[in-house]
Amino acid sequence: MSGRSIDEILASARERLTRVTPAEVPDGAVLVDIRPAAQRAAEGEIPGALIVERNVLEWRFDPRSDARLPIADRYDLPVVVFCSEGYTSSLAAAALQDLGLHLATDLTGGFQAWKRAGLPIAGAVAN
Image 1 (cartoon, rainbow, N blue to C red):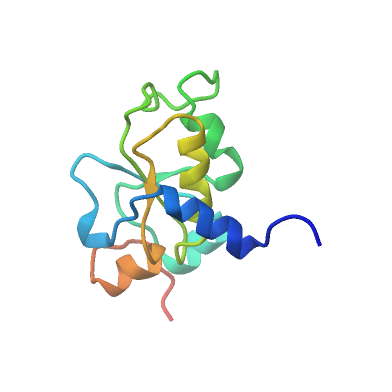
Image 2 (cartoon, one colour):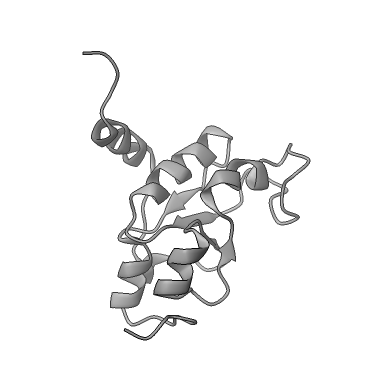
């Protein structure tokens, strides 16, 4: 059997990251929510987080891309990517590192960890 399993790819991505918990998000870091709209609507959002869905993340943060966000103008931008539980965000943060954003990382446990930590959220649908 050739190739690597997703578990191997995830482990490899995480070896390169200095992942942070919700309490460890650095001051001045750009929090980036890569969850799809339906997930954000159901779970809520982190106030002030930048919403960039996963399928366009690299184009929005590559300082050389014509489609980049105005904030993404340098390679030392501290970016903390998050998804719902912290799996897809690890792969996304590693992809940003591949672009040269060496400070990119992700939120351990994702949005769910943020919510469990009692940190501010907005817009969640009542359960």
